[in-house]
Length: 117
Image 1 (cartoon, helix red, strand yellow):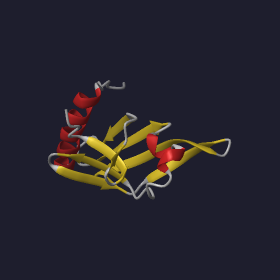
Image 2 (cartoon, helix red, strand yellow):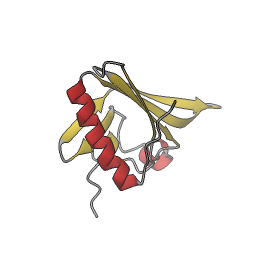
Image 3 (cartoon, rainbow, N blue to C red):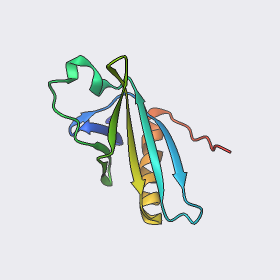
Image 4 (cartoon, one colour):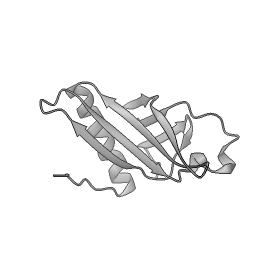
């Protein structure tokens, strides 16, 4: 089966480590944020270093791509351990689009949604 919904840090190379995703949304639903944390992602492994530079986080599915440039590496004892990326959702339409992506990505990666109190 072809992975239709994927996340990439270098275009053309799918990240196989599944992120922990935290969502926030304004009370009126007009905007929000999605924070992705990838622990020990493929892109930080030594065999990936010659593939190119991380240019952003690309959320790809059959509708197209959503991109954020807010991508940061987290280091422990001088070694990269995780990547955190923040995707800003600027409108109810963008929220709906993001949720369609997450539904596809979640189904393909056996993720579930848990609402925090």
